[in-house]
Length: 301
Image 1: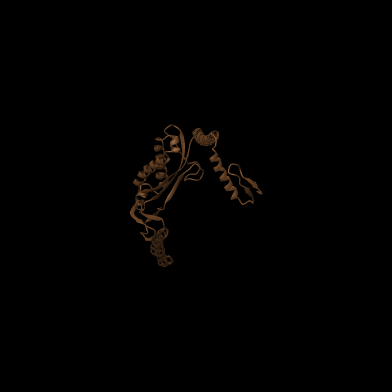
Image 2: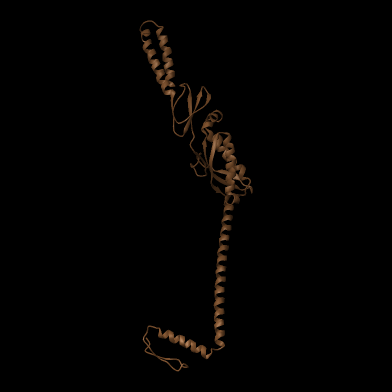
């Protein structure tokens, strides 16, 4: 475009030179040719627009936005038109309490009040992309700084509007997924109206006030101690049951002994003992009696 403007000025100057007398008039033709060459070179550069991969272009002519969208690749346009590119890939806008981690330098975490009046600090990441077909309208109504005008304020407002429905502890634990889904739906409705597509919403961190955090940790420790004590008591009951069964067995055995053993039962037990001795691998000599007395064992190893 710059070369075209210079070429036009030089062309006008060549006509002015032609109206003069003498040597100046003789150079007007050469000047005119040079001006035409400049205009052609400038037009060639302005006519061919290359849109990079993952981007689209929106044409404007003297401030008027054209509804036609230029997609990635080589495009031929009116040399007088200006092409504004938009990134249509997935973008990540983070609001974090860690310095220089998010879209803004410094602490950019979202501070909200919960239903119980406590201040909760939330780190949030918004994954979204620009709809290619909506880029002319975005340029016309919002401009290229949609991050500061749309993404940031809508996300922060949605967080605050939904956090007031939950207690601080619920946000931190049991209701976290439900809270995240509500925020997603709220932001998505606003994004759709403005030509943006919300892909994913990540509640990265929820920081509770120190007093609440201490209370939660104490409760968790108490629950762990209670579970540990329950395990110990259960183990002691099992050990007591084992000892009771063992004592009952000893008592039954003693009761049997106290009633006395018959001769036949003693004889049977003797035979069993002799059989075990006979099957033993040790060398021995067994002198059997008449069945009433215990046998004599000689040479046992």
